Length: 328
Image (cartoon, rainbow, N blue to C red):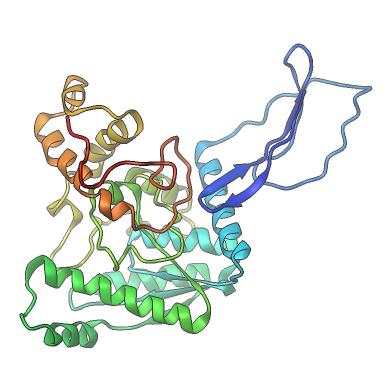
């Protein structure tokens, strides 16, 4: 049997290659490399069994994401991308994968600090750009943010004011992308997307969301494997959106080590509240997460396409109602 597989990305789907030949007894006679196009000649007169290629999960994930970025950008007629580089792990990973996919000359990082951005974040963004040999632009938000505040009939406070900041970032990134004929890449991960921990028309803007099918814990695992390019401090520091003083993700969310296993059961196996609690999850955690998951469907409908690397990704293959959402 000769099995020939496609290689390449089509929107969010990546065909992984790895074509192979097996004999009548199911023994492997030939296997092509994964994620690589090639022309191979096999001599059927002298078939000899071979050992299957050892595959590492993180290597496969990285290869799929790199190929997905490369093909999405090139097949849509673009050459360059912009990444809003915050100094955090998500945007650092997206920038790193983009450089591997396109080359450093085709990736521009943009650091957009607000009044709440730390010196550490600026230093980390600069170090990431230096290691990747990419252009880094810095565009402060404060003046534009204040102009939007002043334009409103009521001074925004709380969440309304916090969300203005990523929306200013999104507007500036899109304007720069239009000017440079480049694509903006969205740095959102699956954990944030699952519970709506993002800002529509802000950090969700872009043409492609490369890591939107990676849970936050997967982001950390993949970043660890790329630690020669992603600074150790970026991997180890507490994640933060820096939208208010001393802001950390865990001020608003459960720890990702607790959140991701629960999200996996909700998304991958569609367990109900009753089933989740029966499976051993803390009822308080379930009751904190499940309503946010249901309520965020409208946001997920408006996200850029994600590169699929898990059995169940958010995207065109998923159809869930927004208004009459399913409940336990």
